[in-house]
Length: 269
Image (cartoon, rainbow, N blue to C red; front, top):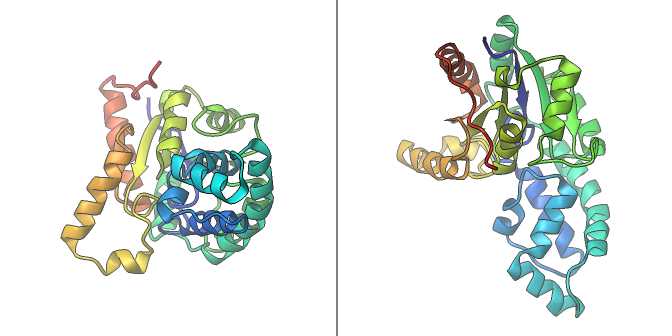
C-alpha cells in the first residue's frame, strides 16, 4: 500500500508565502466596524472557513470586550454575517495581490505526478475567492484536479467533510493512502478527522507569517527557531516539513511507514 493522493491547502501551503492575504483582510474588515484587532487575533483561527473564522475572532475575550465597548452590546451571529459581507471582497482583492506560488510547489507536484499520486485541494477560502485565485495559480503552473471550498459543504475544517468529498471525487481509498498537507492546526485536524496522514508545513505558513524575501533574509538560527515554534502549533501532524518543496521526501517516508504496517495517527475521541 502506498500514498495515492495528496490533498493540499492553498494559502500558506502552495500560494501566498506567509499566508498574508487573509490576515490583512480580517484586520481591515473589523476596522470597518470600529473595532481594532491585532495580527495575532486575525491569525489565531486561520485555516477555518472564513465565516467561522470571523466568529472565532469576535468571540475572543479581547475582541469581544472591544466590540461591546464600541457597540454597547455583545458580538452576535448577525455581526458575523455583516463582517463577512465586507470581508469577502477584501479577501478577493488581497488574494489577487498575494497569488505568488510558493517556491518548489510546481516542481514538487511534478515529482508526485510521476509517481502516480493524484493532487487535489481543500481550503478555508470561499468559492468566489478561489474563482480569482485558481486561474492565477494555473497560469503559474499549479493545477490540482479539484478544490473543495468552504461553503461547498455543510461544514468546513476541522470536520472531515471536505476531505471525504475530495477523496470521493478522486475515487481514492482507503484513507490511509491519502495525505493532507496544511500550514494550520484546523487543516491538520481536518486530515486527522478524515483518517488520512497529515503533513504540517512550517516556514511558509500562517504560524511564521513571513514573505519569501523576509524569510530568506534571516539567519539559519532564526529560521530554526521559527520552524520549532510553528511545529509546536502543528504538533498533531504525522510529519512536519519546512515547505511544500519537501513534500516528495515526506511522502517517501510515509510510504515506508505504510510498508512497515504503520497507519495514520487517529483523531481523538
